[in-house]
Image (cartoon, rainbow, N blue to C red; front, side, top):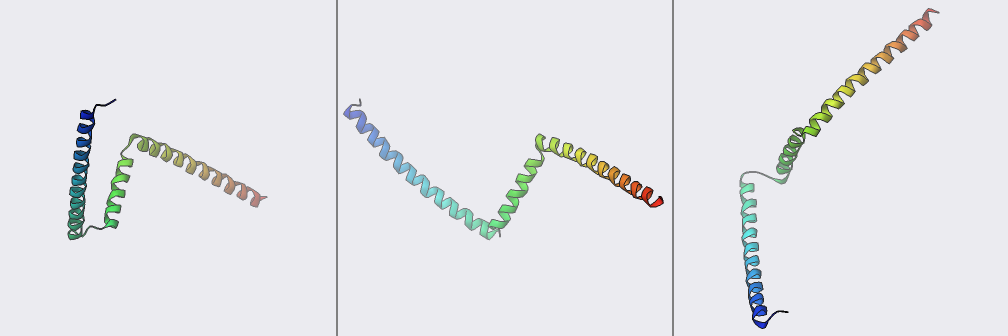
Length: 102
C-alpha cells in the first residue's frame, strides 16, 4: 500500500514522463520530416531504397557461412547431376546406335 505522499510523487513522475514522451514524439516527427526532405533533394525514392536494402541484404546472406557451405554443396551436387545426365545420354545414344546396327 502506498502512502499519499508516494502516490503524489508517482503522479507527478507520471505527468513528467508523459510530457517527455510527447516532446520526444514531436522531435522524432520533425526529424522524420527533415529526413524525407533531404532524401527528396538527393533524388532518393522508395524504389531506390528498396533496391539498396535488397542488395545489402543479399550481400549479407552471401557472406554467411551457411550460405557458402550450401552454395558449395549444391554446386557439387549440380556437377554430379550433370555428369549423371551426360552418362545417361551417352548410354541412350549408344543403345540407339546398337539398335540401328541390328
